[in-house]
Amino acid sequence: MAEKRWYGGGPTQRSGRWVVHALRLPFALRLPFTAAGRGIRRATHAHGAGESGLGKLIELHAVNSAGDMLITVALASTIFFSVPTDEARGRVALYLVITMAPFALLAPVIGPLLDRLPHGRRAAMAGAMLTRTVLALTMAGAVVGGGLELYPAALGVLVASKAYGVVRSAVVPRLLPPRFSLVKANSRVTLAGLLATGVAAPLGAGLHQIGPGWPLYGASVIFLLGGFLSFTLPHKVDSAKGEAKAQLTSGQHHLHLPVTVRKPKARVGGARTALGRAAFWRNRSGRPGLRTVGPSVLHALQACAALKTLSGFLTLFLAFLLRDQPLGGLGPEISLGLAAVCAGGGNALGTAIGAWLRARGPELIIAVVLSSALAVIVVSAAFYSAVAVAAVAATAGISQALGKLSLDALIQRDVPEEVRTSAFSRSETTLQMAWVVGGAIGIALPLHGVLGMAVAAAVIALGAALSVRGLLSASRQGAPYPRVA
Image (cartoon, rainbow, N blue to C red; front, side):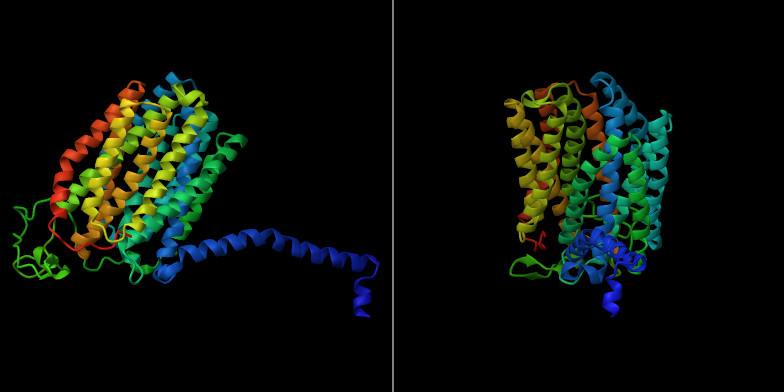
């Protein structure tokens, strides 16, 4: 009888059926999102990353990358695509002067300043997220109303973004799962950021169709979520037990520091062991006295700085070149999109190659990557074409990814744990400054394809001259290498 009354034709029974369908509909709508969320959680928390807290950092970095991409889309559509090429170049030059020049002065301060906040890393990451939330809303109002506050707000966003990057690099060593290499962890974080960027780019373009300020509104929501996720990281992120500061020099002592002495190296089968490397960096009192990162890390940082300079140069130079001179008769947007896809695909491929090169020496990898990039760019300068531009963009992406992974491996191998987070923070700041220098060269150079490739080749040649010989010399010493991924 109850079933008969339920399916009867009265108003009460019909209302009951509508309530049931109304309750079921949201669940049906939520099902694809909840299933996708579970899949993402399984991927980010696999192989012990969930227990160690690395999975939460991977998700946080994906959120950060998505927000940065929405801001990039908004700025590009406002400063770059909304006006003719000559005027756009002037606007970007003004943007560089107002934002990048102060940032070049502030960047060296970011690392040492964050070194003084070892117990507040979660708060620092949350502060960087929430700062960008407020600044994105400010920029949205400036884009709609044409206010001059756009440039100071953009500078603030840039500084906050780089501060987050420095803290993230310092946090990763604290969240390694058991039997998990540092470079493998960084490759996962990087890959998550790339995937999030790929999803956010079309989302930002769609929001821009609604209005020029909508990508910035979306970015503010994403950064607000990132601020909440920052505090979900484990408490050990804020621990600074046993840490000290590192300086980016290759010397083994300073006048104001205790003199380090080289103790006998423990060798097994001709290879220097971890015990021998630890003894190398101990002072006379037997306590860790490292204040330098060592020659291998310094040469690797020089090579990666050259690759980062190349990235900044190509980003701005190709943006204007392809808008003014599209590839093979294609439109400017398609040409720029092709270059961006090649660079992003190359970055992802470089991360995958790093996972495949499990037992190769990091010094050798960086030397090969730098030399290969130089060869590709030189050929592209000699035979400039659409294929050459695509090849250079892809090569830059692959080289930068492999170079950064190998630099991480060297820091993991040669820098003791008590100064490793400081070395990460300062190396990250150095690389961001290199991007600024490359971007400035790209905006100042005349729009000539062959000339641009020649300048890019000169940048990489300088990096190779400074670093390759030292890297190969270190590689021949036979030190045991950690897994590159």
